[in-house]
Length: 178
Image 1 (tube, rainbow, N blue to C red):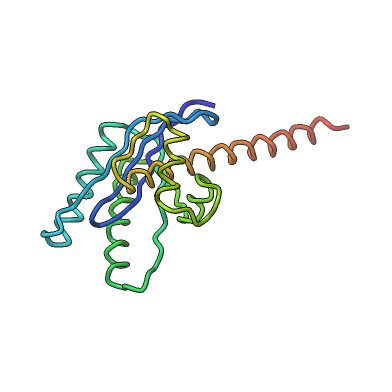
Image 2 (image 1 turned 180 degrees about the horizontal axis):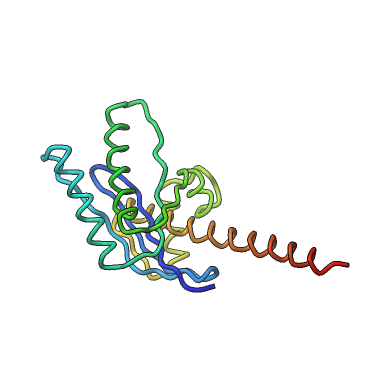
């Protein structure tokens, strides 16, 4: 399997985490991670533009081939959920404009993939990200979460390729059977 570069994105209005990894289907390699912050003193439109510009710069510099983003959960604060949804929309728009396919993963699926349980805390996620990507040293929980999202996508890709190979092998053996 050829090497693929994946960006994981953990959307947020204050800070949007991003993490980039390379994978060949078996091995994971750390490329870079960080976060894009927006200025809380600015209006919503300016803050969304800051996220857009920051993520656009990351994509231009690191050239990922695929993107993965965390799905939004709904909390009790409707206004905060709406703002998070708007930041998430920008976080999806940037890779879409770059022509990348975008996969979405539920927070519990990311935690289960990286930590082994669907309810891991931030410290567990960070520790497992550092274990799986020894060269990574995320500067924030958002960057660690973004790397976890990228790792989840890398694992999902591997399973998808394996399933395709099994189906193809089954079709080939059916054609050659007498």
